[in-house]
Length: 539
Ligand code: 6FA
Ligand code: ABL
Image (cartoon, rainbow, N blue to C red; front, side, top):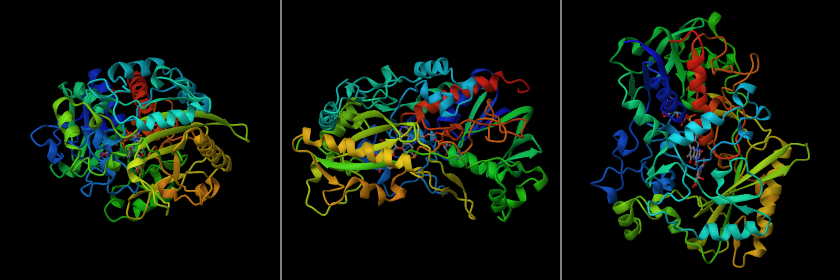
């Protein structure tokens, strides 16, 4: 049967949009290419130590670092060459869950937003009401494995930083630090899956269908009639819309761009790659109906650089290496008994921000994330791995570098032009920020930097940093919101040149917010759903 709305992708953008549309009484089909994640969604992938419970890898926050080291990593999209979650919840089922309520700056016109989006307060309030943040996720209210925050706060106190509860004042992002905040709930992964998806699922007019990959939208010129999927149980894999129905793409920055290319929407070079494909080519509309939009351009992601240190007080928690297979027995037992303890939190412990005026007159913000352990160490000196911790420095709001994403001949979604440190002042600002962090070390007796070590200075370290490890998984901008001629979607998130095709996911965000983006994105989805419902001509 046809639907009022077909939402493609059950990441944070898709779940929140689908929940709000179904709450308004519309019939909504949410199509997800991947399978279940948390126990609540039917997921069953769990560590042996949790057998007999419904706690999966996706539920237990302390298993976060094992997402990157597990050989059975079925949750990543295999046809996207950067990290992207392909399962119910998308990125929010596998991410670090760092959760920052958006600031006014995040939605400012100087950050690329249309004026009509700047008043985000009611949408952010709606988000906060559904999904509060916590900086002490363990159910006993205690904080665990806090040595890293103690050491890094000493480093920052010495440089004029203030200690705050970060989500109490989202606009305070200069010389501040605080405990890492998350959207975990009751010691488990929470996010949109545990909240918005549950209210949607309780409605008769909402349906979630998993393992259904949307290949392209089906259209007559500017009118979308439905979507074509890999589902062989329906004729042509086709899911139809009601006559005035709408499709909403929420397949993520790479996923939504690819669906557009495969629907004849985007730069001609990308659509021609689709045309050359023996399977996808025949599903394209005739070239007279192609819609040329800058899909994949204007892409941004935080450039991030890791500094690794040791300090005698640190417990690196065996670098999280054994959390899935064989964690400390007492920690596993405590978590199973009451969802408390070290396993109730992902790896980050402390976050900080500082603003930097650039030589080009633009202010750029630096975010730091500190955690026990390290993803890689380069020194050839001996060091004590049980005492190591990482500070990741991200450059966020204000960066000018942009890249391009697209598809290759195999229709895999790929970065085409890397977006990191293309702009020279982005680069010099990040270098200054790293030098500032390091300059405070003398105030912290016993702190030793092991990556880079004393054979490499910060400038050389940044110059030689492997770009593939400079990424932050915070891709935005590929379907940028804005004005005709420059943007992909309009102020209502409708794709230019179409009557009834929308995009609501990270791809419409014009510029990076201060912090890790999924909190801000969920406010975007609240606002987008309201604008789509208010737009005339729909169901
Ligand atoms: N953001 C934060 O704010 N805090 C964090 O700590 C954080 N950590 C990470 C992280 O550790 C990793 C490894 C990654 C990859 C991202 C992180 N992020 C973090 C970023 C954050 O998760 C993303 O910004 C956010 O999830 C983006 O949300 P979107 O709604 O834009 O897109 P998703 O990729 O989450 O979801 C897309 C969904 O569509 C997926 O479920 C996918 O399976 C589905 N899909 C894709 N193509 C499809 C198709 N053709 N048909 C049907 N479904 C499709
Ligand atoms: C984020 O927002 C980033 O997207 C992730 O990259 C980051 O996790 C989390 N939040 C937590 O800060 C890091 C891991 O801590 C590393 O161990 C891992 O190597 C890296 O992601 C991979 O990108």
